[in-house]
Image 1 (tube, rainbow, N blue to C red):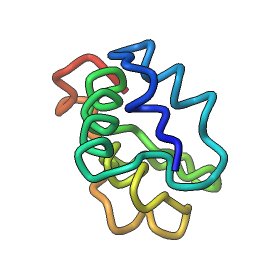
Image 2 (cartoon, rainbow, N blue to C red):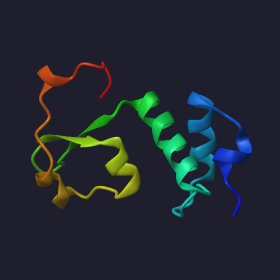
Image 3 (cartoon, rainbow, N blue to C red):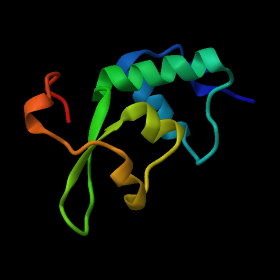
Amino acid sequence: MSCPVCESGAEGKELVRVIARAMDGNKITCSEACHELLVSCLEAEFGTHKRCVRMSTGEAFRVSVRTIIEVGIREGDLDKYPRWDEKEVTDGRR
């Protein structure tokens, strides 16, 4: 299996660009270590949690980037997560 994370040698924002080009709905890393590198780079770039909004109601929920990457998220899953509280946001990212 060709692994864009290992092959690129990229870091930070450049690694995010490499991954975006390589994604095709399949697993894109070659090992657990490579997967962890990818997740840590994405968390550094986008923050550890994202604000996911239920389109039907406008309610916002706090979902970890790791969960979004590893499991995915559907509107029906949002009730499993805490509501987004603007006061709790400390890293400046959304």
